[in-house]
Image (cartoon, rainbow, N blue to C red; front, side, top):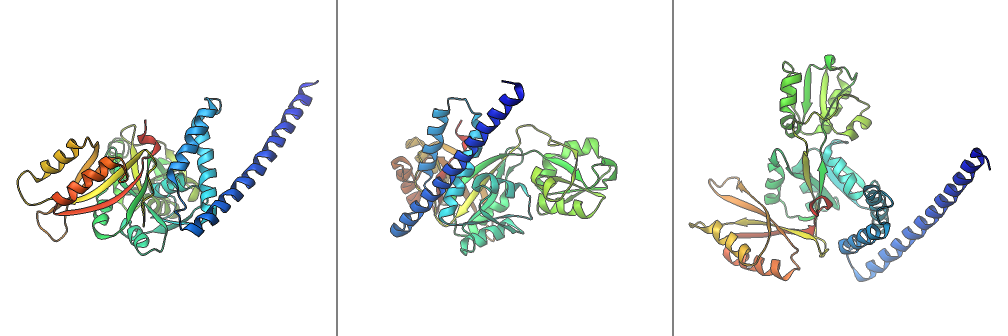
Length: 362
């Protein structure tokens, strides 16, 4: 058999495999719709994170490293989210405009089948979810270099929503403009966080070019698309969306730059087996109040992942504390610790229990 005939034979086999995959995908989405109808009859939640985690674990084990694991996860994540969304179409609010890092995180989490709604501020994302105008919202909460996103923490004090999930997104900052020529850039625009994360690069390479903080990286990309003298620090998604040219890739000052995003909704999911619980606490005004909280968690062997304080607007020298703990409210240890915290603290609010992002599991 000639080389050409062999290639043709293999390609025919690939076509047959693709046809089989398509048929199985059609069958899978039909099964998902059947499950959705059954859940409607019993008013059960459409999202079962424990079941999804079991699928990923089983597939990873059965794969035995033959198919690249990152690609395998990405493929099945899209399949699973698409099938889940076939049960009920969802709309996700995010900090816009289109192609912000928050938008990119939403696509990574929910897949391309969800409907995305651009909002002008993090505050508006919370408002959309609280009022039920969107099923979910996605907001940045902290960056590995610049720390907490305070507007997100402050919004938890104003709105009654629950955390439903999280995702960690590695952040690569690109300097972009219409021409791709650094000489054309007279102003660099971006959100305050990316500008801070790239300040040393900008100082060394564009020392005489002023920076312009705007409310999102997407807005900066829009400005760059409309003005040839504006450069933007933006996401890879923004480059495609606004037809911009890359001037320099990866201008962040530190490697390993990662932003954690939270998915907010009206109700947290059930226990997945690998979860995190977030609380908002106000302390009693007495010496050692914070130590009492930490002692309760220590006595129950609760792993405290994060603690952050924020001032209460309009109440001078009054603070609320955000706590992240490893575990789910359905876990007896977490439930017992939270009951004690409720009795001890002047203010107590459960913000939600949700699956840890894959990046946190290693």
